[in-house]
Image (tube, rainbow, N blue to C red; front, side, top):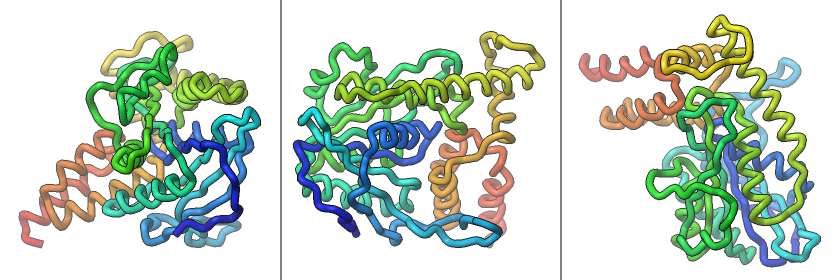
Length: 319
């Protein structure tokens, strides 16, 4: 259920949607945009039936279930009197099996607000070094939208997929006649488990060039430099070298993947999806292939290996 907190008269609004994912690229890009432009909260999606919390929060030694499960709609009234912007942010993705219904509810709200264009952000893991400037890829609901992004030096994703709600929301939008684009920031394959502000920055720079919002990205650039320096320190520690760090071999990358698991953790949305897949695989072993792919995507198979193999042991013993 969507609860309207304040009624607004919007001028040709477009919508941006974001959830957690690899490198927290989409979520952090949206949160930074919200802070920079001082978006105002105006509606909430309160749908606990779509979510099943896998953890509790603790404050002052007292644990509690999450108080708000859903998402929040924010609005930015554009002083240039062009497109106002609706920003939807959720701190987790819904249960498997609820994603279509959840995304459709958001798109119906967009229709009610007369939204004609939806943006989403995502990460693309590629074999690049963390010190490289990431490129931004674009996937769109129609090739005609490329006209709006000419001269922005974006790479077209001609084949592949955009997993999770960052992609699905645009598929639902297209089915209901709303245009949409996804901007995907590159991240190194060995850093998918940690925040990647450099990729979030690249995505917002592309958005800025497209929409000309006049946003100040200096704080995010500083954050990107800080994280890059921390990764340099970590790699230097793992390799037993002093900085600067040189090009990484495949062996180095594999070592870094393993070491990073001790310094980082899965985003809540990824952890939840893995738990859902374990439940499904326990009932239907054919889903184990999907589970293994998800574990490999996040480079955490070793962490779950015993539990994964138990699925087959129990099946063999007839449990």
